[in-house]
View: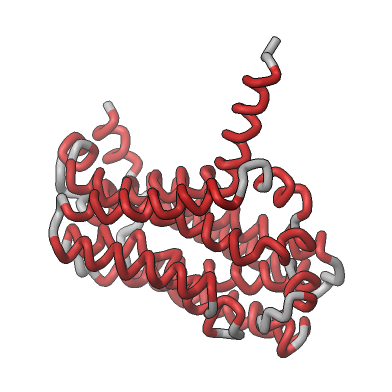
Length: 301
């Protein structure tokens, strides 16, 4: 049996893990390494990529900045989250705001120190990333279109960091990035629909608040249609191996998404839609392994 003190420590751990969205950060770390191994540097030996100290520092610094970003975002959204996510907010509140803010500064300082081991340009990059996340959390996320656009850009920034590191400017990278950008934009707009009540009460000028649910659904439909462009290009013009199976699955899921979307009226419906998009994005991370199954097996074995 755990003592009361051990239970408190465990609760605080889960509270902090929830506040920094540890599960999201883990997925991003895996995505950065898989992207590096199978898309950005496929010609390099597996061990060379896995044990590259510079890549490790970039991934670690990125994780620290993103964790800090979630903390500062929760700090500014605490009143809205009390309405939209009361249970999660209660769990996050076990650790005091002062403690979380202290961790926020520690994580950002750590990220800049880590970046300094790579280059001065890396310091500028991560410092700019930290500032952009703060600006988004403090101001930009309350603006329609701007908030959604900036959020999507900030989400794909970790991949931009390793893209620059490997200096791989292949067209296929941009097409993959376009697909990911569109999916994240859809997820952000769906989250706005899900959080409509809290946004209204806290005067957040999101797209659903300003233009209404119907206009938001039209925009989501357009975004879903646009994803067919990079999907078509990736399947027909680039060597993606068995990853085409993933993209056919995406088409099926996006069709289901649109059917549910136009029949959605309640928050629970938008939560389901949000989870569908989250599944597509996370599945895409592991779908990278399908690009060349034989290479994957050879590199592992």
